[in-house]
Image (cartoon, rainbow, N blue to C red; front, side):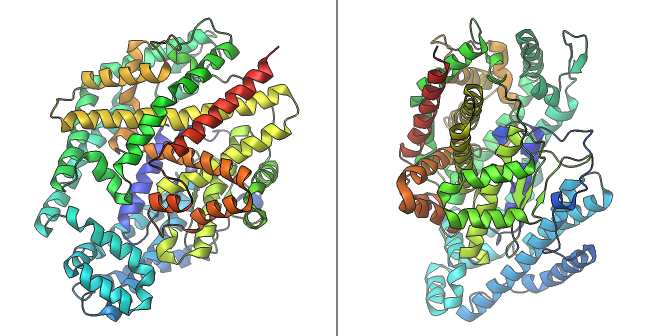
Amino acid sequence: MPNSHTLTAATRRLLGATALALVAALAPVAVAGAQETPAAAADAKPAVDPRYVWDLTPIFKDDAAWEAGRQQALAELPGVSGLKGTLGTDAATLRTALDRMSTVGHMVEKVMVYAYFQYSTDTRNPTFQERWSLSQSLAAQGQAAIAWLSPEIQTIGAEKIEAFIKADKGLEKHAFRLHDILRLKAHTLSAETEAALAAYGPVMGAASNTYSALANADIDWPQITLPDGTERKLNQAGYQALRQHADRAVRKQVFDTFWTKFGQYATSMGNTLNAAVQAGAIDAKLRSYPTAVAASLAANDIPESVYRTLVAEANKGLPTLHRYFKLRQKMLGLPDLHYYDIYPSMVSLDKKYTLDESRAITLAATKPLGKAYTDRLAELTSRRTMHVLPAEGKDSGAYHWGTYGVDPYVFLNHQDDYNSMSTYAHEWGHGMHSALAQAAQPYELAGYSLFVAEIASTANEMLLTDYLVSKAKSKEEKLFYLGQSLENLRATFYRQTMFAEFELATHDAVERGEALSGAKMTEIYCGLLKKYHGHDQGVMQIDEKYCAEWAFIPHFYRPFYVYQYATSIAAGTYFAEQVVKGGAKARENYLNVLRAGGSEYPVPLLARAGLDMASGAPYQALIRRMDATIDQMEKLLAP
Ligand SMILES: [Zn+2]
């Protein structure tokens, strides 16, 4: 999770979401952070086969058309600003204004998507850098041009807006957004106060920027010498590469060195994180929210009970996590288990999956989603919708992004291994989600939030594992897929929930009026690490030096965000189980969630499909699956 790629992906998401108020989910959906897709191999050959390079002409026919599109969008902005003060005139005026904003918003989106696609395929290319930078600037100007929209709608008031919506059918597609703006009225401050707070924006970001500079640039990274005599620098990338080393002594050395180094910065990093937590608490208080977590969840209208139920259910399910750790110890043949034993693979599989095989397997594995789904997926993946191969200068990892009215795109670094295939199925889960939502919804309602986004991708991962296990030819192959699945559930469900619990504990402490120092954070984190890993039950020993790990997690500067990885994988597990067991009705139920896009808040949307996210059901489905996976593995391992 905590690697620079996922942080930048999160930043992009934030940028997209705030840059254009009318574009609900404008940002690439990266691969679930927990997967930590390795960086592109430096010696990889540039992608030459046109089959492996996406065709961006459906967005803009060439670079000149992109520039014309950008100029056209820029030229539209004064007209959009000029709508200020007119929205309360009558229903037709409001409809015309919102339609115009949608059109301009879509133009900006296309400019951004095209530029980002180019940029991510070669981040060193100065022309691509410039286009991406110009797009970001356009988005910021677009945001500024409509900054008055929400205050104006709130001033017009619910009564008049409702009457307008009733009077003009053309306002129907805008109703969700209008209601959303009105809903937040009680938490919006006076224009003067909002302007004053906005002016403090750069200062509010200082804690996170300082942290980032410390954690990525300023730390004097230590060197270690491996048993073969090679010297390795233990920076973030070095740590992530070496922590799964097959030699246990190396892993211990890596952990000892890396976390001791982070521990030396616990005071400074405690100060920066404390500032971020305080800022969140103050903002929540000013905006009349009971807590910082409630304020953060309000954006998607998620009840705080969802967050707290997730934490409570994960805690109830810790015996299952501990069962996995005991199995891991046995399979690695270790006399005891330490925190540095968490990353090495339990089973290795020397099997290659070409892109064509990844495609064929993903199509076969998603069969339970019905013929219409797999037909559409087959059609999309038969065209040049993907940037496939690693290349020098290409961004690492994987993501899905696109723009309304154009088929979805997927960015990969396919390296013909199991992870690449799993990423393929994951990203096309997102791609199909977008395709289904676009087919069913107007532009205004097609974009979906992260809370539902990772359901489609993780459900596909579950279906993939089930398929691979059912087709595996040997015991080792079965154990490999099951082991990978267990590790994915640990990293995405339990680890992210542990982070979520840390965020809750730090914010709760501040809201109780307690002081929060680096030492206090280490103490809180230590308690959580020990609890989740069964330290007191003798499952896994947690050395106190490793408790500085909290300082390594950049997502804490975007509070109450990572819990959505855990809720999503739980919901994805639930739906995968339902679809496999429940036949056509369960399948339609699930596909309707995807088709709904952003036309409804996530919690009621899932409730309509029979899943209450504030109940134990989704989390128990995940824990049940994990227990069943361990059962299967133990059976395979029995003499
Ligand atoms: Zn994803």
